[in-house]
Image (cartoon, rainbow, N blue to C red; front, side):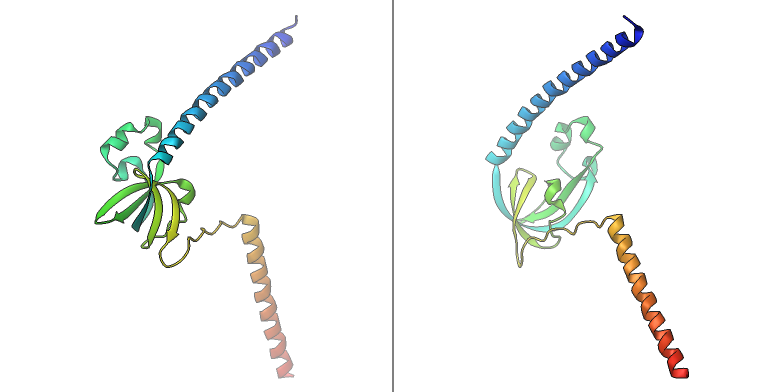
Length: 170
């Protein structure tokens, strides 16, 4: 066999082994996530709380208990997490929010949320209104087209004013 075919077989063999390992570890992670989701569902409670502040902070800066920081894997300690400071009853607590609902949590308003331990999983309602979805970020194309439309309107308006001014002088 030629060298080319030997190299090709080795590359294919490495790819097959890598895919098999990814499949195995993916299945393992999926089972682990399902077990964690069951635990969250088992401990969930609907709680009324006043949101004081919300930020994305590193785990060490978040003000969470030391036990929580110690139980977090080392690779997650540097990432920023969505932290919510809320008054639940007479106590002020620091909670972790799910990233999907973090942007829709209103600040300085009272909400009813589903909480599992120190983890906010869902917003049920906001006192004095409904849960507002955060505004989507506009794409570059949309922003540029809006800017172009605005500039053309300004240009047309200034051109119309100039032509009115010239007609009055005549």
